[in-house]
Length: 202
Image 1 (tube, rainbow, N blue to C red):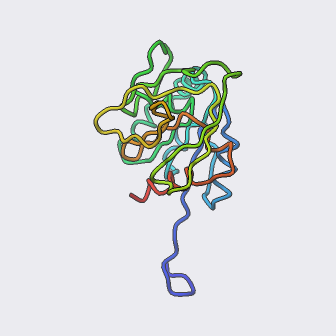
Image 2 (cartoon, helix red, strand yellow; image 1 turned 90 degrees about the horizontal axis):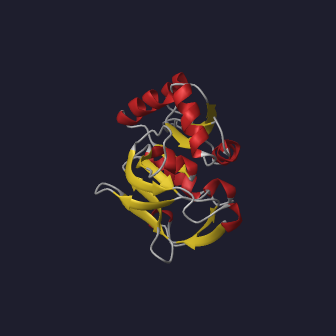
């Protein structure tokens, strides 16, 4: 329906954040701050009502176990096959990877990449780094790494978006799937969240 000014009404993106465990509240706050309709997702039926899903950082083992218990994984794979964008941050990147060495617990297995858990050490080894991320523009993105994984292999259909100075891959995209080893929701920089919203329009 046209607006009063005569231009079409723009549909607000409805984005879910998997709220089973981890820092989902920070993602919800960032999404709402940029005008998205953000909802806390904890049941498989909720995946039918959203335009995209963020899987937050936390404990990948716990996220996987709970996602399996609540039967979220089959519905998530179905929605991804239909074209729904999904973004995994830190533990979320582990959860959406097709290969995670030594990880015996359930994974969604969506993105053609190998991810190594706790690749940079323990909590005490957390660090921050400025990253060049071409889709976000020329300004570096200040990334926060907490018990971070690293992306050690990407498939032929996966685009590398960011690397550390030593060449380690820490952000990648495969179509409408996005993975980051770090926590954009812990900064005041909204560019990664805006980029994720744009994937639903591509």
